[in-house]
Image (tube, rainbow, N blue to C red; front, side, top):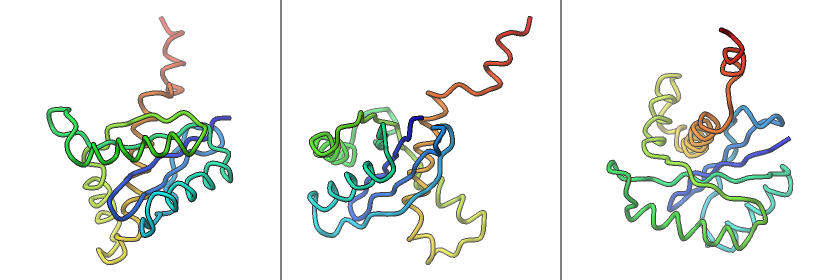
Length: 150
């Protein structure tokens, strides 16, 4: 079954999320600290792809409110170019606008103190990117059931 890895790429961290074995549910993973440059980032991601038997990567790209690419999106595009040279699985883009704010709101709602949010915010944002990607690519069981109804 397909295993999908989602990434929320920031200046200091990379949030990671995965699908389950069926490729239909998203779960937050770890957060990679970006302290030693692209080589270490790419090595860590290659290891995740191998260890988790990843078949596809989805990278969140922050679009501006008008849908255009801004400075941060340009940085993510450069990251994607590096990633393409490091892994041998398809890479797709998903709009990740407001995922960090949504992740913060979710963590606030469940009562996670702000000091603890820093350790998980990026992986939760990656999970939201993956959830949105799955929502547009995986048909729900209800859609399949309703097709046969008259």
